[in-house]
Every structure is written in C-alpha cells, then in structure tokens.
Image (tube, rainbow, N blue to C red):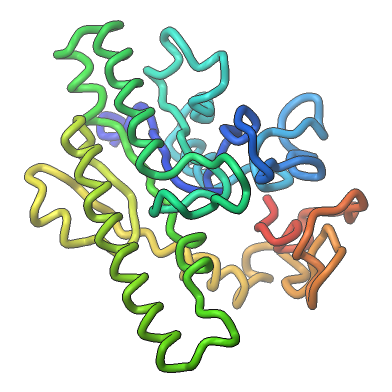
Amino acid sequence: TAEDTPALIYSFGDSGVDAGNNLYINTLAKPVFPNGIDFGKPFGTPSGRYSNGRISVDFIAQELGLKNFPPPYLAPTTVGDVPLNGVNYASSGSGILNETGSFFGGVISLENQIRYFNRTRQDIISNIGIRDAKKLLAGAIYIVATGGNDVVSSIPRRNSSSDDGLASLDLRLDTILSTLRSQLTKPYKLGARKLVVSMLEELTKTLTGSQYVNADSYAIQEDIIQNYKQHGFQDVRNACCYVVGAHGGIVSCATICRDRTKLCFLGSVPSD
C-alpha cells in the first residue's frame, strides 16, 4: 500500500550502485565517458554511475515512486534537508574488506560507508529531533550491494597449486562473510530495520525487529543474460563499447555504439 511505501533509500556498495561518490575522491575507479551518456541533462555528462544511464538503485527508487534518486554522500549539495530523502554511500572498486580496491587508490570501504551513514544520522537528528529521526530511519530501505570485488581479488593465482588455492579461497570467503555479518549489525544499531542484502538471511533471526531481504544479484543478471530477448535486448555477447577481450568490454573506450538499448552490456557493466 502507499502507506507502507518507504519514503527514502540509503544504499551502500560498489560500482553496481555507486551514484557518484568516486567523482569526489582520488581514485582510478572513476566512471568517465561514455558512462552517463544517456543520463540526465545535458546528455553525455558523466553521472558518476558505471552505466550509460541508470543503475539498479535508480530503478528501485522509480518503482517506489520516489521523486529523486538518492544523491552521493560526498556531493557538496548533499546537505541540509537533502539527506532526509535518502543518500547513496557506495564507492566503485570497494568491498567488504577494507583492503579491497586498494589497487585503484582511494575507495570507500563498506566500513567507512557505514561511518558516513552515522554522520548522516547525526545530521538528521540535529535537523528534525531524535524522535522523528528514529521513525524516519526505521522506515527507510537500506540496500547493500557489495562483495564482488572481494571475491574477484581472492581468486587464486595461476601459479598456485589447486589444493592450496582452494583452501586459501575458502578461508578468504569465510573472512569476507564474517566481516559482512559484523558490518551489517552496525546500521541496525543506528536505526536501520529494512535491509536488502544477499547471503545473510540468518540476521533476521538474530536482530529483533529487522527485515532482511535476500537479493541475489547474480541470479538477476544471469536471468537477463539467458533470457535477454524477453528483457528487450538483441545482443548479449558483445559490448556496446568494444575494445579488448572476447566480448570487447574489458576496458573503457571513446567510441560507442549508436543504439545502447539493443546491447545488454555497455562495457564490463550492464547498460540501461
């Protein structure tokens, strides 16, 4: 019902949900042109998103009937009453572990994203008072989409033995999951109650009053790839921004296809 529809979204994660925070930090992971070519006005202006247009959190915001997409936390305009309508804390190249993404230089780890959220919480309390702030934060949706960069960086090198590599990977994955569990208790302590996140259904049983929704982003992407025509695409094998790799999407480019609506991938990232 309209009464149950959340009024705002707070999102955390990596390039899949980054709305522009990396534009404001010193990092190699910046979504430059052609990212943003179909987003906003004027068209072709980098939006801070790794996409030609919208990203997943934008679609969710639209489906919920929100008037605006949650802005990046680091944008100088995300002040005053703006955080009352949601904020995006995600950082491209980041992960669950603090060291993930260090190759890119500066990225905002999940731990630091949650610290930024705590600052937002304090600002909201100062703005509208603790009673209304608690109500607002409890009614919001919190989207956490991260972990892919942690897994990729954990894949054993080719020169490692098979058994040693798999054992090392298992230990690494255990560390990633235990760290994620620990990190996700922090938003709960800060007032979050409705979280959309993968793999951690058991948290609903341990955190009183919480609602965790399991969102399998891999399964969603796999469905689009396997049934791309049903989703309105004509080509799932080639990247719109073709440069290097079997499908042309390993690195960014300056030449881009004319009709981005036909191809499933802009480069290494999904198209709008």
